[in-house]
Image (tube, rainbow, N blue to C red; front, side, top):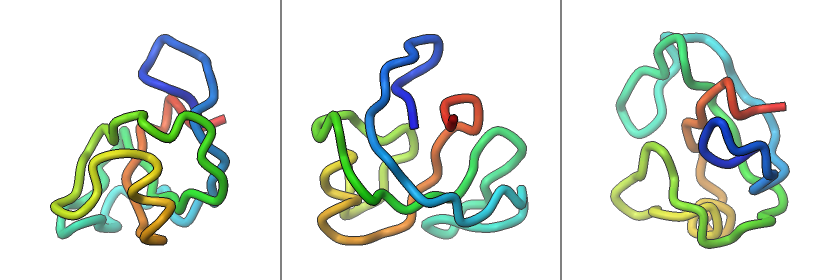
Length: 77
């Protein structure tokens, strides 16, 4: 995964779980511009989530808690 577009720096390695626009993360549908991922290995631990959850605000929070997050599809490579 990469940081905020157009920056191409990697922020984490993750598993792609869904690119279905109707799949939900935190009770919100992904839509066409987000994919559902789970962080395997954070690189930039303090990178803020594009769609923060109540209990997760950064890449490291999501990794430590093992939660699924929504990440912009344009930033997944």
